[in-house]
Length: 95
Image 1 (spheres, one colour):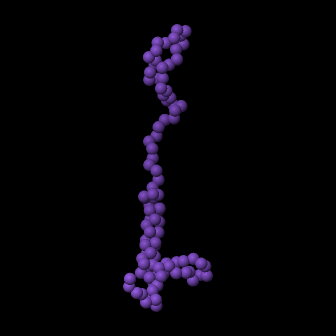
Image 2 (image 1 turned 60 degrees about the vertical axis):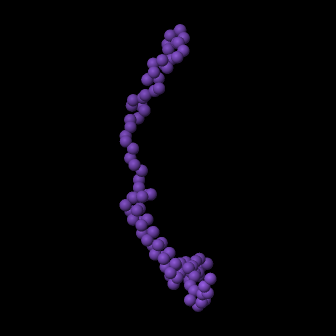
């Protein structure tokens, strides 16, 4: 493995200067700079998609209108007249 001079090495993450124990991207490291740029581009693309309501933010497709069941009820026994209960006293034949 190549040896690095410790004076030139910059970590990808460094502690925040705001007095917290959080880590932030280090802009002095090329990987850190790439992460900063990619994060900003990603945030801008997501904001654009939200504004235009595209991609995962697209509203669901409108379903065609269908009448209520109370307007025109259809029941399974309406199609087959043998399935309706009979009013007669004699039993109906087996299907």
